[in-house]
Image 1 (tube, rainbow, N blue to C red):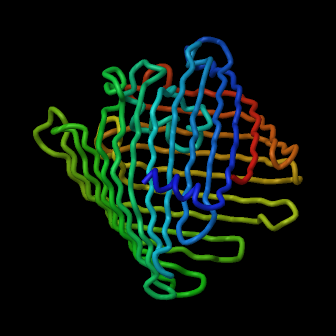
Image 2 (tube, rainbow, N blue to C red; image 1 turned 45 degrees about the vertical axis):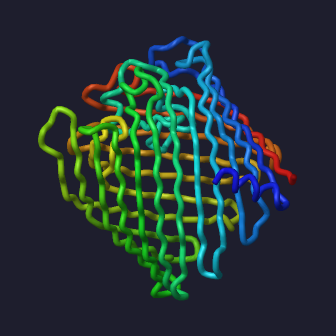
Image 3 (cartoon, helix red, strand yellow; image 1 turned 60 degrees about the vertical axis):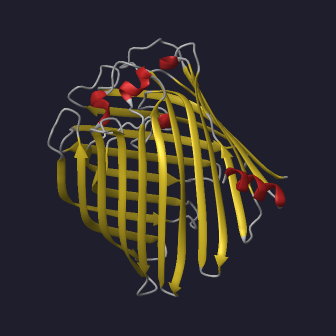
Amino acid sequence: MLAAALALLFASGAAWDASLHFEVRRPSPAVPQPDTPEVEADPVLEVKSAPGEFSGQLAYSPRFVIGGAAGAQPSAFNLLHALEAWQAAPKLVLRAEESAGYGSSIVSLLGPAAAISGGGAGGIPTTPATPEILPQVTRIQTINLLGGGSAVAGLAPDLALSGAASFGVSGGTNGASRAVMPLQHTPSGRAELDWSPTRLDSLSLTGNATGSLAGPRQQSELYSATLGWQRKFTRETQGSASFGIDYSHSLVAGDPDPEAAVLPQGAAALNIDFSEREHPLTLHLQAADTSAIDPLTIRVYQRAQGTLAFDLRPTPELLLTASGLAARAYGVIAGSMAQTDLRASWAFSKKIALTGGARAAWLAAALAPAGLAGFQWTAYIAIDLSDTGGL
């Protein structure tokens, strides 16, 4: 499928987007590491075909870190992503998606890739559950391979049916890294029916199935059925709510009895968008309580999480941003974490922006290593460059 994306890009008038996020941050005083600035570079090169019946997209987005926890030896994680789409009929769209990632990553709660995502950078997920089994390491070598496809069909003006399936392989690439993150196979599937009974409301019925297999006695399955509702209250305000049931089944090494559970799950969100005002403002709030498969222990745990994101543009050049996350894992694994990111960006032009800010993280887990547990923070300055063109 990657060859198909390349053929689409060169068979039609394609456009490219390039960007670079270059950041320098001070090491957190709470983390034992060399007292040297940590430097990170996140370039992105993306090529897109012209819109049409067939379209393709190819992106390369590596991540490089040196100094701080990385030490003198740079950490590099490479990620390649491809997307192909086909308008097979007026009301039928088929898509295929592939990604491949490989390299070394720094275990951190303070980098831009980890901030307010609940995930670590470069393929190392960092959740309230996972840090409690992380050893005293600052770097692991990982691989991430993923391929999948999806389809969206319009059954009626107010009714649509969609489905997706994927299969992935991820985990450590050597013995030391696999002791942290086992190599695992991750199939998943989803089916969704969407109905819009009014111009302002939409309802959805979704079924999900995911799995993770790392060995004969190290595997989990998670199935869920969810009913969702979205409402556009005003032109600027939209809300959503969902509830459903999760069923999980796990086999744990050393335990002859499987872990199985049926639990409720739900989420609610509110989005406010005043982007058309003189001083644009956006606000996003979300709360959720769901089940998830921990990619380090391959066990299913429950996760309660709240997120907040706020953007304000007092002037055309100045952008103020605040974001935060608080999460708690419970069930077979327990732990809590919180993250926040406060920053201000000044755009000198459409292609150049300068940002300064601070990030903080707090982690409480029974067996968390000294390098991750407790409170830590960092201050940073970054420059963002971007440009576009045609091929």
